Amino acid sequence: MRDDTGTDDARVRVRPNPRGSRPRTKHRPEHADAVRAMVLGVDRGRYHLITDDGTPVVAIKARELGGGERGAVVVGDRVGVVGDVSGQEDTMARIVKVAARTSVLRRSSEDSDAAGTEKVIVANADQLLIVTSVADPEPRPRMVDRCLVAAYDAGMEPVLCLTKADLDDPGPFLERYAALEVPAVVTSVVDGRVQGLDAVRDRLTGRTSVLVGHSGVGKSTLVNALVPDAGRATGEVNAVTGRGRHTSSSAVALALPDGGWAIDTPGVRSFGLQHVGVADLLAAFDDLAAVAEECPRGCTHTEDAPDCALDEWVTAGGAGAAGEARLASFRRLLASRSTEPS
Image 1 (cartoon, rainbow, N blue to C red):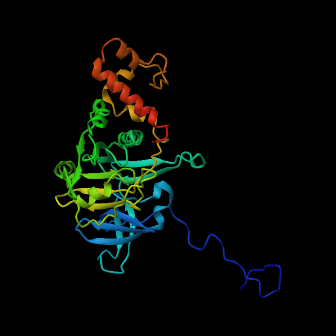
Image 2 (image 1 turned 180 degrees about the horizontal axis):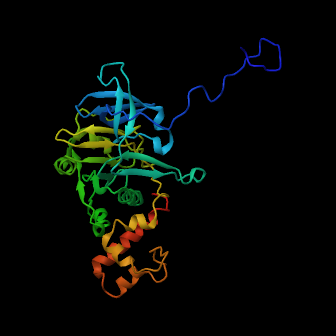
């Protein structure tokens, strides 16, 4: 029998109870049979995965995972999938679980209209290879500084990779980071072949590494040398601006021939760090953090911070020349969080 709507017009439709006839429940299926996999790439809502047994699978994200950062699935994530995991053409699985992450590399927006907006770039990597050229284009130390801050915040080990050493001496640039004790590798291109590749392989083999760098520094050339069938597009440096054009449009994880993963990311021109606090960065410097315990509450540890224990440590001679240089480097990184990269 139709509900009384107060009209006899047969064209009036009576909507069912908006809550539906089935009671809602907070219980979700556990998917105990979900197959474990790693996210290799994301393309327009489709997730390219590799299962633990080596099967390539295409999947979509289950609605129950939700949206926003909490429900985001990124390259490097370890996930559980159900459905068709045969890997055959035109098949689709569903991502129903995202495992707890061991590390998260993120950057925040530098646009004032989107201040505080953070984006997860890669999950579960243990090493950040910061690629910059010695020349053509000129190195951008403030961009490197910001990448270092992002690595420390993510709990990843940073490694400097200087390319195009055949064009200029990498020594002066490396000296800038000596006090931070950041490991470095140097490559060059001679007769079309990448030299110094063995040292890079030694750093990457058996680990999950993210390669990041601004456009034109030779990152894609390096990736193609490490993974010959990667096919990453390479581009030239603009003769007017001195900067390269973007050649990689999205992050992708590539299996290294001798084990491990190299995650290539799009060329970046900015790296927002609004999400990184002073304590987050200080935690990466055990020696400075121990001294800073004597600082007054709320100390910013900057050069103009009153009664900062780090200044007393230096002036009293306890730091030595190496400690003084390390403090200067730390404060430079601290300042880089709020200055534009150049």
